[in-house]
Amino acid sequence: MASVGFVGLGIMGRPMLRNLLKARHTVIAYGRTPAKLDACIADGAQRGTSNADVGARARIVITMLPDGPQVEEVVLGPNGILSGSKPGSLIIDMSSISPLVSQKIAAATAQKSVDFLDAPVSGGEPKAIDGTLAIMAGGKPDVFAKAEPILKCLGSSVTLTGPVGAGNATKLANQIMVACNIAAMGEALALATRCGLNPEVVFNAVKNGLAGSAVLNAKGPMLIARNFKPGFKINLHQKDLRNALKTAEANNVCLLLTAHVQQMLSSLIANGKGELDHSAIATFVETASHVEVKAPSA
Image (cartoon, rainbow, N blue to C red; front, top):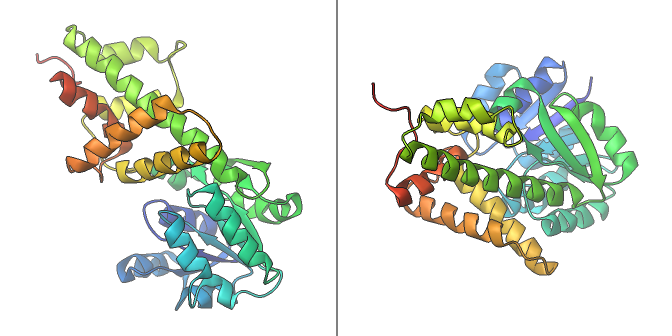
């Protein structure tokens, strides 16, 4: 079994780390929040003392961080992972960031003969816990082959989508589809509720038809139950759509729906809902329409 470094111990990172431990890998963990690091040590991980320490002690290091600036700091910054890494090591960034940032980091790691893979994930906290994430990787085929056994401890679908940056470009496409799907679900169920229908009945009627999707199955019941405990936060989804729009601008692609939903997310964040699960995107429609998606009163 391999020694794997892990930096980023939040909602997604900790369950992913646990699955590496379940697969009998030695995991060296580090994070800036002492309580989160202590919890991972209690799970069975070894304590890293810094990003550089993790890089020095593990030939494979995984990062799971909020956005590109944090990944750059953790990997390339003073006392960063790269400063401790040995030639032939591998850094796998599983954060959702801009493809351009992934390529910048890969160029820097290559200068030290350290391999790099961008491998963002989809599935949120439930699939991180189950080890059934969808993982979209970008990098060289031989580097992917080295990482694949580790990634299969974390996901049920592990796909090499192209060179470095392709993983995050694929993740941006994924996030566009998810956000627009949730927004459309909100409009549909708000309309059904205003028409006097029970949204749970409507959900059950359509979920096995053409309108059915993994997004609808996961987020529809949360909306109807008014359960917005975050598996993936609105703040993070807004970041992803922002990166999608920047990437689209650089490539002359028109993303009208994405831009509209991103503005919905900005409004929700301004209203204090940024820490809620992204199923709460649907509440933007509720507020605008003065209707709440829930079963009719008895």
